[in-house]
Image 1 (cartoon, helix red, strand yellow):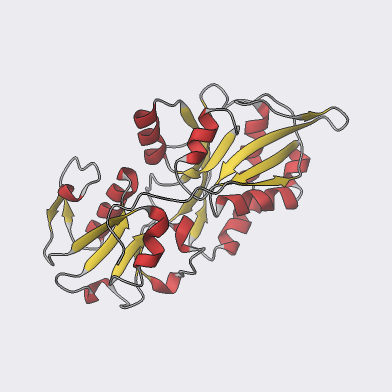
Image 2 (cartoon, rainbow, N blue to C red; image 1 turned 180 degrees about the vertical axis):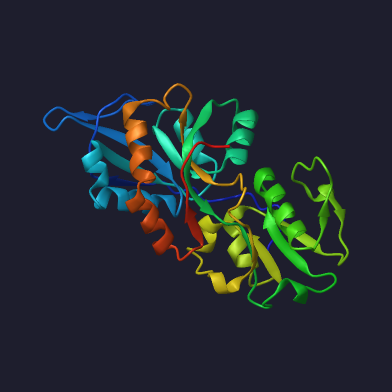
Length: 279
């Protein structure tokens, strides 16, 4: 059995050098090739953002924009922001605005959004049932334990008609106002959520972990809508560096029509491309 409130996540940072090109000063020291006049932009990302960044480099868009992208892939939700704050990387791509805001508040960091890139819908998955109405009295549902995504999950379950949430909810089980089916909730670290699908009747999984675990749209029994969402994933950097030419060049290629078409096709609708300022 999986234990509730499992927070231990193995942190694996794998650096992948992706060739592209550019010029500018970012939040951490950048490497400039004097011969080619190339500025390297160091970007931290989780899956699938690291794949999107690889595509931008391999498609030649980054080179045309004058930047070289160096990607560090992470498997947790804390280290990419810590690395950005300490200057190990210049930007990151993996988080939505509520998570970023909560992280800054909890850690005293000054990370800011550059703009929207893609929307990974949070979904309720199941391998045992095919629709929400099949959830029975007393069933257990697994949900993320970090506050921003726990609140997001409770709101999703409310829209699915399973519970109601108190006004002013912050993202804890105590925020549930009514629970007609007396459902039980297993709060887990996001990385462990896919395994819980085999154990519980249903569970909410962040797309970052759902795709590598082999979960598909056919196993989604309820999911978020992109309309009006505040959970679009953002390119982020440190305060004072949003306007740096290399950061702006990076954002431009991440939101180009070519990259947006790749995102929509590659992830078969599970991820929707986006652009524009964070809201």
